[in-house]
Each structure stands twice: as structure tokens, then as C-alpha cells.
Image (tube, rainbow, N blue to C red; front, side):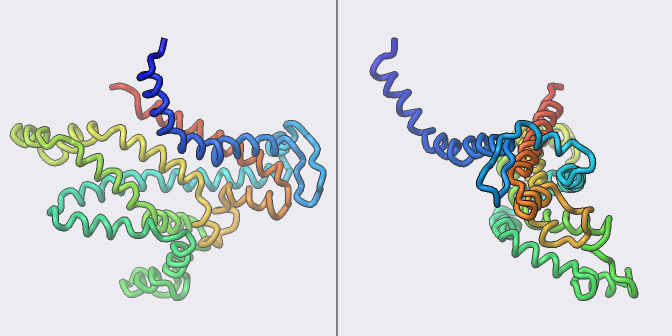
Length: 298
């Protein structure tokens, strides 16, 4: 039987999580449920009647020759490419910058931490405009710099027009824009590693690589897994970079662009919701697999 004090304690604890629970219900759970219900209807924006069609919207996605099938699988292919190309750099470069930052004198750390983090505060539109001008074929800074270095003199590199250059451009822009966030997370994790472990390793004659492999990485392993999963989720949701920067057609037409086209160009909200639900399930499956694989006990 609960006493008065324990009841008050549980009530106080519940009040602390109440704002998060309300926000989660309003902005996550209810929209997901509503989106799933819409995916079961023929929901055309111009039609006042939205008949229930069951799983027909999902069937059309997996039926060859339909517009939904083309948009979904072309988009999924481009999205997977971006995830594979970007996530390793987002994790490794973020960790590398954090290690370099920790090696600096204490007076310089705050300055460089701010410098690296500032791009993360820039809006997606501003980021895309900056890097679209940087990678412009004729007058872009990157091509002009390469010409000055003598790497190419006559044929400018079509950074945003053709593969593999377009993927390089998108990954570089993404790194510049978001790497500061991962770096800050890694810096905080590195600050939590006991200095005594490093001192003991130095006394035993361990070099920098040995300390990184045997002390640093095992100590921050949960944070590495967290950054890996969150970077993967963010990369699956890529939209601004290819939509605002790329002119490479279907090569960089990611899934969110296909969903947007289905919803507002074809005005088929039901099919777009079905594509979004399948995308969400894919992200969940990939995240669980990543967690299981990376979190296995040695």
C-alpha cells in the first residue's frame, strides 16, 4: 500500500515528465497514428470524399509500373546512397575534430568549439545557397581553385550535375553543416574519460594509437553508437541538400522528394503517407540492426 510520502514522490516525478509526454503525444504519436489512418484511404486533396481503400496504397508502392513504385524505389536508392556515403564521415570526422580540439590548450578550445559549431546554426536554405555557389560549374570557388592549382584547366568539374561528383559535393556540404553537432557530443564524451587511465598507459609505454584503441574508444563506445544511429536517422531524412543544390535528376532524387511530389504534385496524400510510413519503418529496422551489431559484448 502506498504511503502519503511515496504517493507524493510518484506524483512529483510524473509532473516532471508530463511536458515531454504531452509534446510527444502532440507532435509525434498522434501525427504517426493519423498518418497511418490517411495511408489507408484514397486521400486526394481536390476530392472532398476520402474512401477507405485498406492496403491498396501500400500495394501500389510494390507494384511495378506505378508512379508510386518508381518514386519510392528511386528515392530509396538515392537515400541509401547518401546514408552510405555520409554517415561514416559524420562519425569519423566528428570524432577526429573532437580529438584535435581536446589536444589544444584550454584557452583555445572554446574559440575553436564555437567556430566549428557555428555552421550548425545556419538554416538549410543558406547552407545550400553557399555551397551551390561554391560548387558552381563555371564561376564556383572550388573549380576556380582547382584551375589555379593546375588540376584542371579546360573542363570544369560538373559538381552538381553528374555522378560521382554530385555525391562528393552533397557529402562535403553536409559535413560542413552538421559536423559541429557530432563534434560537441564527442568532446563531452572525451571529457568524461578518467585522466588516470591515460597516465597509467603512458607509464606502461603505450603510444597515442594504443591509448585511442584501448582506452578512448572503449570508454566512449555508447556515445559512438548514439552518434552513429542519430547520424543515420538524419541522413535518411535528407532533403534540403539534394533538393536545393543538385541538378543530377533521379540520381539524387531522395525519398522525401518523392513523397513531396506524390503529396503535392500528384495530390495523393494517401499514397504519400504510405510511403512515409514505410520510410519510418525502414529507419527503425536499420537503427535496431545498428544497435544490435555495435552493442554486442566482446
